[in-house]
Each structure stands twice: as C-alpha cells, then as structure tokens.
Image (cartoon, rainbow, N blue to C red; front, top):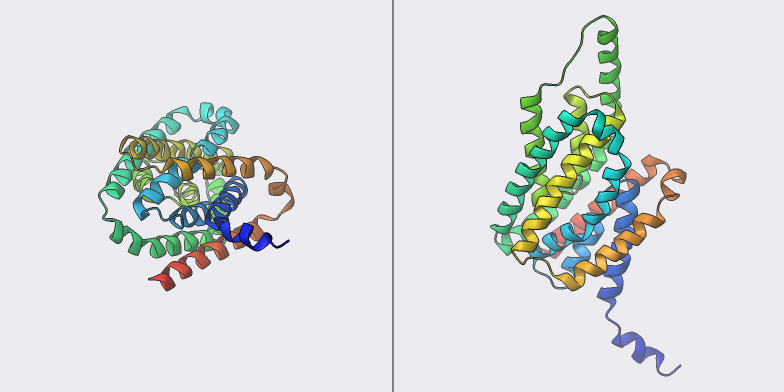
Length: 270
C-alpha cells in the first residue's frame, strides 16, 4: 500500500482524460453530436498548440463519420443530384475553412476558442425550438403541395449556403450537423431521411478534405490523434443502445451543458 501514492503520482492523468474524453466524444457524436466539446479541449490540454489541436481533433473524429454514409446509402442514391451538389459544396467550403485555419496565428485561434465553443453550444441550445419551427413550416408546405403548389429547392442559393456551412466545418465544425439540417429544411427538403443523407455527404466531404489538408501540412500530432480516434470509435460502437433509451432532449441538454462549461473554462483561463 505504501507504493500506491507513488504509483498515482507517476501517472499522467492527461492521457487518462484524453482517452475518457475521446470515448465520451464518440458516444455523443453517435447519439446527438457535439463530441468535439470534449475531445478538442482534451487534446489542447496535452500541450498541443491550438491550431494543431483542432487539426488533430478533426482527423481523430473523421473516420467515425464513414459509417453514417453507409447507413444512408439508399437515401443518397435517391437524391443523387442533390448529394453531388452538397458534396461539391462540402469540398469547396471545407478546403477554404481548413486553409484559413492554417493561416490563423496560434494565439489568435486560442482567443477565438471560447467564442467558437460558445457559438456551437448556442447552436445546440436553439436546436429544439428551431426544429419545432421547421416542423410547422413543413406542415404549411405539405398543405401547399396538396393544393397543387410545388416548392422546388433552388440549387444555386443552396450550394452557396452549403459552402458557407462547410467553411465552418473546415475551420472548427462543432454543431455543423444541425446547421446543415436547418439549412436543408429552409430550402424546402421535408423528408428527414433525405435531409440526413445530404447532411452526411456534405459534412463527410468537408471534414474529409480538411482531414487531408491537415495531414499534408503536418499539423496532426499522431500519438494523441490515435488515442482519441480509437477511444471515439469504441464509444461510438458502445452507444448504439444508448441512443434508443435516452430521450433526445436530455442528450441535447447534456451537450449544451458540456459546451457552455468548456466555453466558460476557456473564458476564465484567458
């Protein structure tokens, strides 16, 4: 027993927290989104420079998004032209966002971190009311369709709106899934499966091109990236039953609380 204090004092608790945060991030991303609220600060806490921490986090969580495409492959096929448009927007916006991030000074990005976390947490906070408002909008549109008035999404404005959201994905990205879903609903998409499929395509490619740019530029700290990636993968797999048991409002509230706590911590640190 005398050796117990020495054992605990020799442990690097930052590695333990990185693993736990990665696991919890995988759980959140699988059931509600917002995993970056935990994984990004944990990587930053390892002493990684802010821009490198963001790049490392992007690479760590991206492989987990691949399974989403497989889940919605049938809906992607049904909306192939729109999926192509959203994918192109994801590549354009994600490239621009990643390049701007790489040209942002480290201290400037560090000062932006609490504002980015606060903004992302606010996105999650309003997701419930906004979703209810969009549902009412869908009911109005269905009434118009029954009356013979058909609303076709305008592709050019949709493309530029998707580029703007994808830019945010390449630069930071937390909460972008909800932004994509809101944008698609506002542009006239009513089928939730189509909305999810198009969101996944744009988000995957925006993060994917940022993934490639960060690796090519040597911004990824691989020893932390692999730890977070493996832990997030296990968390995502383990959360399959959790998503069915826990109500979405509870999960959304948990994500908002974590995001606001992280934002408050970084504001206090500055």
